[in-house]
Structure formats: structure tokens, C-alpha cells
Image 1 (cartoon, rainbow, N blue to C red):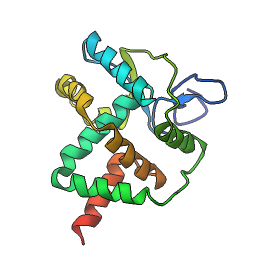
Image 2: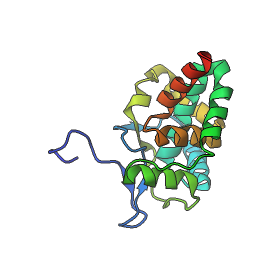
Image 3: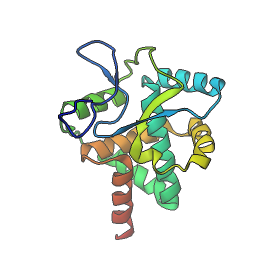
Image 4: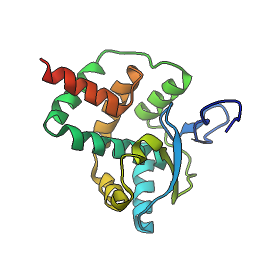
Length: 179
């Protein structure tokens, strides 16, 4: 962290010096965590993340945030997801270079390097704050069954408006209920 700034730099994995792979969504404050799951789960996560072309940290964060959104929105989740998919039909630019890199990372299947620091992960502190320590194991085990394409859709819609997935989904749900 640069002591002259108020926020830490984004954790990255070196793909090449000019194109690092983002481990976290731009703007998120990293919090390091030892994954509270068994080694065989970590191996499955690594394989699923590699297949998705994402760093493990990004894969876990997207699916964890999706799980929180689905839980909070319940019946409104499907209409919110449809709104996100509809919104993405209109091309938009993400603001700033790091957000553009994030969008590229979510939409291109270039695949990250095989480097990761499992069982250590850098995850958004805003998400970890929502998961009580006594629920971490069950939460992290359940993300494997999440819909990564839905998570990407919601996150792409959110980043196009400079919001987090949660904030965008809640705002969209509010608009849907006011119709």
C-alpha cells in the first residue's frame, strides 16, 4: 500500500507487466482471508476459476456477492437479472482503465495465470462484513453451486453505472417495485 493514499492498490496476479489480472473488482478494499474449506474444495475452486478464465479471488467474490443478492431479493431476483441482461444489450463504456480491464476480464476468456495464493484469498471487505464468522464455512461451500454467468451479467450492468453488484441490484429492485 502506498502510504500517501487512502486506499490500497488493487491486488493483481501478474499475467504480463502491462496486463495484470485483477483479483478484485476496482474500488473494492481487499481483506485477506484463509479460505475456511478443505483442500479438495480449493482444488475444485481453482479448476472452476481457471475454466471461467478468472482468478480464484474474483470467482469467489462474484459468486459470494451473487448469493447475497439472491438471498436478499428472493422473488425479485429473476426480474432484476432480466433487467441487467436487457441493459447489457446497449453497449456502454466502463469508467476508467481499471474498470475497463475488469469488464474485459469478465467478458473475454483469456484465462489467468495459474498463480494464486490459496488458501489465502483477497476478497472485498464489504462482502466479508456481511458473512458472520459462524456462517463462513457454509457460505463458502455453497458458492460452488452459484450461477457464474448470472453473477457476471449483474456485475457488468453494475460496473457500467459505477456501482457494486449489490447496489445495482437493490436499486433495480426498488425501481421494479415502484412500477
